[in-house]
Length: 247
Picture (cartoon, helix red, strand yellow):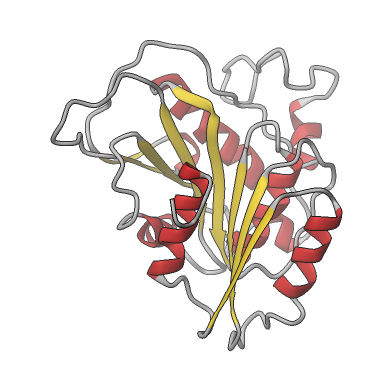
C-alpha cells in the first residue's frame, strides 16, 4: 500500500483502510524509521505538502549522536506556517529539535470547516518527507498549535497517540477526534481574558474531559488574552522534553 505521494505506508498503519479512509478519520500513516544519524544543514526549508521545516544550527559542542525530536506546529485561523514557527522558534534552541509547520489548504484546518481530509493528506506527506530525510526518535514526536491550530493539535493528537507522545495546546477552542489511539500527554494553557475563545467555554471544559479520558494533563491559565506568552511556550517545551515545566 502506498500513500498519495507514492511512498510506502508502514505495516503498522491500518492496511485494512484505504488512504482516503485514513484521511477522513484524521489518521496519519507516516512513521519515523531507523536510519543513519546525520545532522542536516541548518535553515528553514519547504518540504512536501507545502510545510516549512526548521533544522536547528549545530551546538558549539559536537552534537551527541542520536535521532532528532520533532514538533509539528499548527497555525491559527487565517495564519501561516511562517507565523507558527515564531511561537516556538525562540525557545527551540536545542540542536536536536526539528520544527515542522504545515500550511492549511484553506483559511483554517479542514476539521474546523466540516471534516478531515486535505490537511491530513498534506501533513502526512510532509511527515513522510521529514522521516525520509532525518532520523527521528519515535518517542520524541509532538504536535502543538495555537487557537484553531490548538484545536486541530488536540484532535489529531488524540487520534494519533501512537505517533504523537505529547500535545501542546495554546488557547484551544474544542477537540474533535473521530477515533482515539493511545494516551498522549497534554499541555494546555489559556488566557483568562481571552475574548476570542473564552476560557470558561473552552479549556475549562476541555481539560476535565481529557482527564476523564485518562490523559496526563498539565494546565496553565495566565493573565492575558488570545496569545502565546513566550514564558508559557518555554514551559510547554520543557514539559515535553524534560517531563516537567521546571525541568
